[in-house]
Length: 283
Image 1: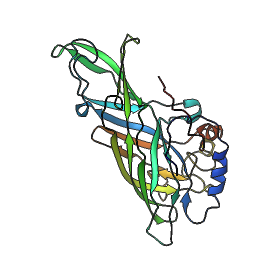
Image 2: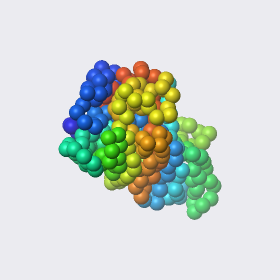
Image 3: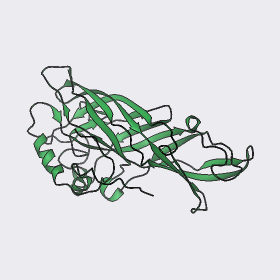
Image 4: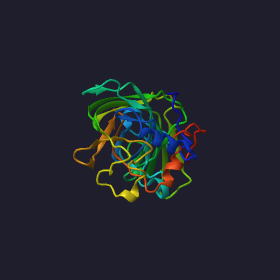
């Protein structure tokens, strides 16, 4: 697969439906190249690893190095339900026969991210005085990052285990409570902060289009999938639940759940083959 480009996720792409159709006739268990929609149930950013310096918020402000609890901020509730994060992934192919059966290396990348602080953060001045409240939002830096990697092991015809790492270069946007024009931005890419390397290891399932998708209402899904492919992170097919799974780094930890998309029209908006547009800035 070519180097993955983030952004442009709401472009129309007829190739998405065609790629899904091709997956139903693929030889052996496999998952075609696609995107996975994720909802962040909880998370945190540890600013002790990339301290907001003194005077960042205003003259006299103290360095900020607290741990900030985060939650997802949905990208587009009308079409993408509660999804706040989108991962794009290459073809998952398991050559050979029998079990366990490892996949070929799979490139992955976060192409959309939208998080917000659970509560306002407290910024102090002149050694702990004059506290102010600020809101924190997190999205992606415009600074490019390399693709991550996903390694999957097929343990049975419809699932197994995976390990993965994702590179993330976030942008932190601080907005003063009660004064929305007061905004401070810290783009880790522009500031020279190394990209975060998030890792994950959990279960996955391959849910073919002809199957009833676990315990999710059928009217919330497009042909049996919560995204443009049949690879589900954090799902034990035998149990039939969408379990939490984590991507962690010292700087940032996120707990995700796979997100069903609400209508068939959302598939076209995702644009499987059209994720090569110009990167957009949400704010």
